[in-house]
Image (cartoon, rainbow, N blue to C red; front, side, top):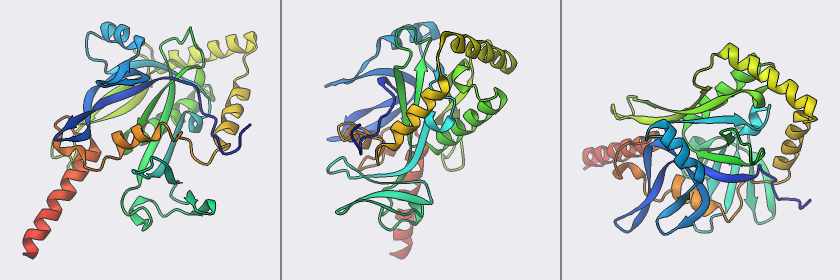
Length: 299
């Protein structure tokens, strides 16, 4: 195996909550209040929709605010990988990835392991480092491709914290059978003092509609028994994924990073694009307003 190349779950599509638009000569992210399933192909209008999007949207009656999913792995940390990440906007290359204690940083001498103070205390990042996470899920029943996942990328603290907590809890109550539980991603809205009463949206993970937690756990145990009888080794799959992630210093491929930077690390914040605002946009707007007030007071 090629060293330095992270082996990540096979991806057949993306889960997005918005799109990138062009406004005043700039390409800026515009968030939405619904999910969109896209392929991995772009044209001039943006990402091409995945065939699953239309069917799920019709079943939902228009707006796609929940997605039936299964997780690929029993280990929550394999399904959701979250780091503090810094990308070079000019080259699209990952520069530094850390967890608040240690980081892997690209230097002229190679990859260096260094202490990580987090984004707020890092002089090297100069404020350009963000929490960044990737979640891989199987959408629907995944009958055609049992290992073909959709990836949800996010820099939302609310989403990262909620997904991490949910998976830890579901893993605990199911006896570690996370990959066998029938779940769904649900888009939720909330308002905070920082959002000035405007809605911000984050992703939650809940038991699939029509099922109770008890039923979901019972179904998971039954499915686990069926899989074991069929010869499927979930523990070996988790271990293969664990080795694959550890094979490279950075998870993102260089060819994918430009789209990530454009959507999640824009040069100008998306706060002026319009509602619904995300928590990142609201924080950016508040910072600019406070800066203007400070300059006016100083003058």
